[in-house]
Length: 466
Ligand code: 6PG
Image 1 (cartoon, rainbow, N blue to C red):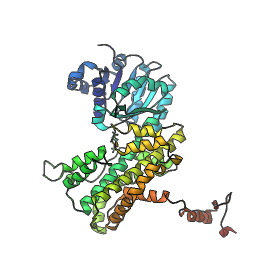
Image 2: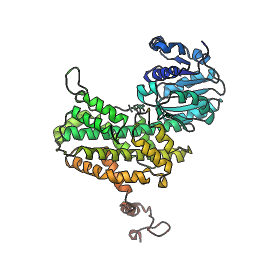
Image 3: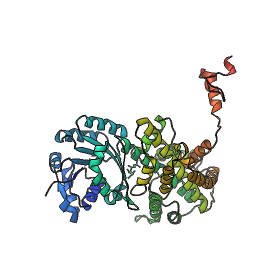
Image 4: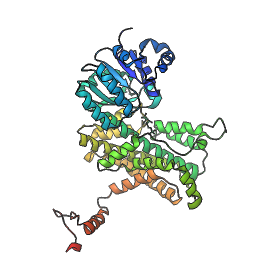
């Protein structure tokens, strides 16, 4: 066996799938794993691809199995495990070698690690990988952060394994150090919002219109053939068809309504707030997951506060339009966070490129991203997606349905936190004059904070201080 072009360390679900993807493109890959007993079954299970896989029990063996400059992709849990592996591998590497972190890392860690490795002459690439196991195996969306030199060294392999949208690889060098991991974090934030929107609309059909899951699944399947086409709509339609083999009930009905989370949605919200913004639909989705996991409290409250909800009788088309409006608003909020972080960190993120590499391979891939990419290509006024003429037109056509759905839902006592947050943001942004003048007056009255006056320069105080 000759040398391998790349090493993959970490043979969990994503690492195994990526290693097979790499081998499947005819690229020799060296693999290693902390639990060495996983390695042989992995190679055996690779079938015809085993000939391209170099099994390495020790990290030293993996480093020795690589062509120069060496490129090692770590697919291990984010956090302390990554720091420990960096400490273990860097003494074995030489200047010009590349360490890639393909986990869902906190981008602050990525910035710190990139600087530490640069001091040793090593390249550190923070790689956002989206698409779950299937994407990793057959073509993920890849969001790359790192230096130009690091990108040059990893581009051939990453381009070979990435998903394709109309022949274009869904991989891009988005900026230095933490840029790739930050974009992946916001991708996940939008993923949280889109999943919550879908769950709210499902909830209205299930609890407001008493539709059986399979019938709701058929609605999602119809939507997947139109402007709402997306991976999450597609899998929702499929999920809702399944029956529980144990009880024969719809599968979704026997799953506990308490959603988990691993951190990326929370990081998006924290960063948005730190940047002086509010990605309110992502916040709503995050909060809704937190509330969902307080199942015992909700059960106690149902007994004490009353859990009855009213009928919601809305045409399928109205729900579809509301969904499209909400999806669009959630993306617009996510892209605002990206734009603000880009200027804060001097990353020069290109929103059209990001929208393009999200069109295939990743969890939020959808038909809408084509329109979003086109809108960013044309350069929307103030860089705001909601001000792009095509997008503003689409919102104008679909927001009335969102308003009808939120009105009907709240009237019937159905919680729709993401849909209502989206509508509130839209209604705030479409008015040049709001009500924060009163807040400024209050701040001045209780704390002499001062305020700006319409049409006058400088800082002013109210007559209450005269
Ligand atoms: C992806 C996914 C993937 C995973 C996240 C979200 O793009 O492939 O975003 O990274 O689903 O970890 O997980 P939680 O919902 O558990 O936070």
